[in-house]
Structures are given as structure tokens and as C-alpha cells.
Length: 271
Length: 329
Image 1 (cartoon, helix red, strand yellow):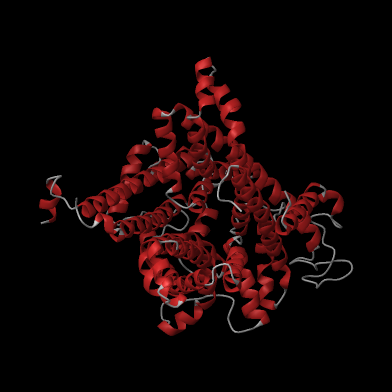
Image 2 (cartoon, chains in turn cyan, orange):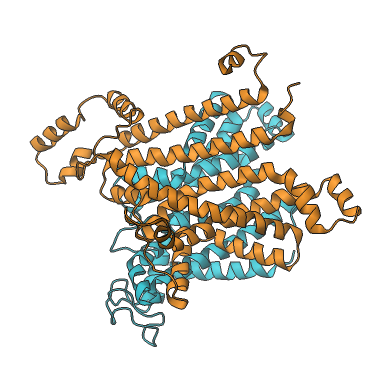
């Protein structure tokens, strides 16, 4: 199957972002907190993207900030994914009061916007990386739960699952050996979307001053640090904003492609 | 009259029954959310008294403060006191400055609603118009341009869109002020001018979803047999859409529009912070940072209530707009 151009661009850009994030310590020209120039300098040979509100190199901070952004988003989407799909499968297989209970809790959590829930919860919890990752993962697990439950419901009535049940296989065999492999492809496409959602979510929280705390930084936090410069025509705040937009769009392109591939594999209406 | 119709199950109009059911379900949900907001924050580690006095507080001072805040009572007692207070309009006082929360909310709620209303008034007709155009030229360049632009605005968080707009409209083309200040004494036009930029950002954020769903709703109707008849009669494409497709797509479009207005609730919080606009979202975010729990609980509950209310409205409109339910069997 030939890869469309948009997916290829998305894949290359996503790969570049991940590469920069993994090797940030070696790629970044300056350390995270080193003041190496004047305030809000324009782009130059020494500072390709200029300097920020107290004279730190923006390119270096972008690379280091990307590491945190991508790490937090990846960790929280892994949690939401593991938790959501396991509970979703469990609800589909067990049915009865477990299904009812879990589904109603998820309904309740999805009845209010997750940003509002996160703000309420973060007003009590200490602000550190672990708490942020857990809160985001937990909130987002609700969406994965709904998808996983719906997919598993379809699979749970298949003959081979029935056969496994009659063979006397246990619950965990049914979930991990029968349902999981068959539910994987729609879930993988969903993973890309959940990852993007997590990137946007952590950036928004950091922008509001309730996410990553200094001295660590992420893209949302960088926008917040440099936002006052915009009034004086300094475009420093736009660089991290651009990075967020670019990452979001490129992962979306890849996820779209995977989604259309998996639907066409299953004989769906996909392109 | 209403009560009479509600008593006998056989005599109730099916639409009325569904609507009442939906509203009752919404109220139940709101009650569950209040429980979640109150007990959820109670159950989490962290101590309000400690948060006020800081880490270095003496145990005696902590005990005194807990006593005066009523923290020694069991949580269910405090929940019912809190809920009872809110139902009678008493939101309690803020921990940080002792101000009455109800008053503070009343001052700011108007500003938030003004901002959201302006955004809604512009974005709804625009989204429907663009959706119609995209559906008319489905698959050709106007559709591709509109869909491409809206697809990229969907992938942007609100604050990123906000700074692109600010940079464009205050630096590249300097026509606006980058902060949105509103004062109690301002005239309506001055207010409108002050909120122009935040409104543009909010419109951008909700427009994309609304337009895409409008387009999908119309394209869905366009596959019906009566549309083919209209086309074969030789009507112009715009006339087919406007007179035949649009009336049948109104029900899904209206519920899409209302759902997206609920979306504005989240957008408003971030956009208010971006523009330092003194309203409810800014108030919420400020007090999350200050760890002022009573304020966060009260404002969180208001946002949740608005969101749930709009969702109920969307469902009720969908129920009423469904002609299959209009005549009892």
C-alpha cells in the first residue's frame, strides 16, 4: 500500500520531534537555564530563534521543553490507554453491575469538560510531574474506555470468544489473548489522537500556570513566559506556539492515515 | 393542566414525557457532579488549613483554623451545608480574602456571558453559511479550502490560536489592543470594541467544529431520494440546498450548534486568561493557583451547570425537532 504524501510529511515531522526530544541534552546548543544573550534578541547566528524574556536561547529551551511536553503527554496517554482499555474490555466481558458501574462513572466524568475537572482537582493536589501525568491519564481514560468497551462488545460475541469460554479459559485469557489482539488496530489510531489531546492539555495547563513548574519548562509554559513580548512586537511567544501547532498537525496526519488504513482493512467505508 | 397530563402514563404526550425525563436526568447528573466536586476534593490528599497557613504552621494554629472553618465536622454534614447554601444563593466566603463568593461571581458572570454571547452571535451564522458553501461545492476547491483551514484550527489549543491572532492583528496589521479591559461604566459600544479580539479567537475555536458538523449534516441529507428528484427537476444547486436540504438538516444542525456553545465554556476560561479579561474563567484560574477551595468548588459547579444545561437543551431541541415523535401512536 502506497503511503500518501500527507502521512509521509506527518511521519517525518513527528519523527523529528521525537528525535529532538530523546536527544535533547546533546542537540540543544545551550543548557536549559543559561542566560546567554540580551532580552528578546532577534534571530542571529548565535541564537537561531532569538532569546527570551530574560535572555535565554529560545531554540535550546524549545528542544528541552519539547522533551518534557512529549514525555508528559506520552506517559499520560499510556496510562489513559492502559487503564481505559483494560476497564473497557473488562466491562464488555463481565457485563452486569461492573459494566453498569464503570459506565455510569465514566458518564459522570464526561458530563463536565475535563479542563474544569482538572482545575478543580489541581487546586487540592500538589503540582508535580507525577500528579500531572496521573490526573491527565485518569481524565482521558474515560474516552478510551468508551471506545474500548464498544469495540470489545462487538468482539465478545464472536464465535472464537465463545469457543475460548467453552474451553474453560479464564477472564484474563479472554481479555488479553482473544479480545486485545483483535481490538488493537482501532485502538492504535486512537492512541495518536489521545497523545495529541494530552499535548494540548498539558500545554494549556502550563500556560495557565498550573502545569509544569519552573525551573522545568514546556511549550505551554514558554508561551506564558514570553507572552508580554507580543505587545512590543517581539515574536518569542510564537515559537513554542508554532511548535505545539506543528506537532499537533503532524501527529494528526499520521493518525488519520492509520485510521483510514484500518477501516479499509476491515472492509469499512474508509478511503 | 401540566400536572394532570403528567399523572396518567397513558395520557402524557410522548414529547413532553421525553423532555421531562431528559431534564430530570440532567438534574440528577448535576447533583452527582456537585457530589463529585465536593467529595472528590475532600478525598484527595491535601489540607485546606495547611494550605492557608503554609508548611511552617504550628499544630495549635492548624487546629484552631480547622475549628473555625468547620473542618472538624464529618464531610457529609459539610456537603449538605455547602449544597444548601448554594441552593439558597449563599456560596460562602473565599479563604484568601474573606470576600463573599456569591458577589464576586455575580460581578464576573455578566462579563463571561457577554463574551460568550458575542462569540455565539458571530460564529453560529458564519458556521452555517460556510457549512452550506462547503456542502454545495463538496470535493471542489471552496470545500477543500474551508475544510483545510478549519482542520488546522481544530488542532490548535485556544491559547495558541489566541497568540497567533494577537500577533496578526496588533503587530502585523495594528488595528486592535492586545488586552481586553472592561469597566462597570463602559458604554455598550466601548465594551464591544474591547472584546473584539477575544471574540475573534473564540469564534475561530468553535467555528471549525460547528462548520464541519453542519457540512456533514447537509451532506447526509443530500443523499436522500427527494434531493435527487429536486436536482433532476433542474433546480439550481444552491436552491436545492437552501429549500430542500437545509430544512431537513435543521434539527441536527441546531443540536450541533448548542453542543458547540457548550464547548465555548472551556474556551472562555483560557481566552479570558490570555486577554486578562476580568470574568469568571480568570477568577477560577486565579483561585486554583491560590488553592482557594471554596471559590474553585463554586465556580467549577457553575461551569458544570452551564455545560450540562446546554447539553440538555441540545437534547430537548433534538427531541422536539424529530417529527416522528410529534404524533402519538
